[in-house]
Image (cartoon, rainbow, N blue to C red; front, top):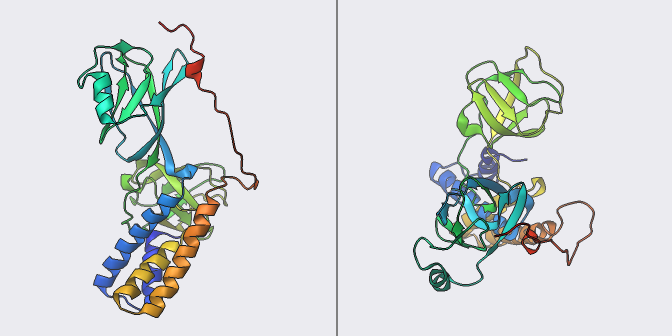
Length: 296
């Protein structure tokens, strides 16, 4: 895997240009490339979920702050999930259906949802408070900005455990979502939560050699969500744009061709989310709204 610092340092090395203004340019184009790559890869690791609770009489609820596009919404009532259907028409038809204000029609079982800029709405409005709403959505990734952190050493980290303890106050809440690597181990682990300036939790169990009362060097880096084998493709885009700006058409064309080829491979890669090599078509997903129990 390549941290954000690794990416822009590679750009500097390959271009032999370490000017501060050029570095700012590289950082901008790396983020631009990553977002372009996200757009062609509709993979599982680009998705997250969020929950809310219904409120009696309310039809409008806030979207998660990092939601790019809603995938699905369900409401859980008495331990049973009811999938809500996205309204198939535009806003004018939605306003005609709901009356343009808080709907007088209420039900425990919303029929439709409609996504607006910062909110989503139900029809009918909720008639009971406290039911769990679960939304699955595609993440709108924020720009990468962080430099690597290597300010302390690891005191304890046990094999098959997730708790990491440092020898000094080096961790911050902003590190959640970044990745940690024990330099002697080489594997990267996503940071799941921040406990204190000396303790963090990993998203999966540590698979390396246990550290007890140690002083092991580590690196915490910010990563894109791209698959490991495509981490470096943003470098090609950044260098293509760099040489285009320098009016070096030969170099620009070379890096553009590599970028576009990797973009095609990335799209093909996203067709399979496992290593089975089998693409499944015509999968039937049962809609539980077709089999309601005790609706009134």
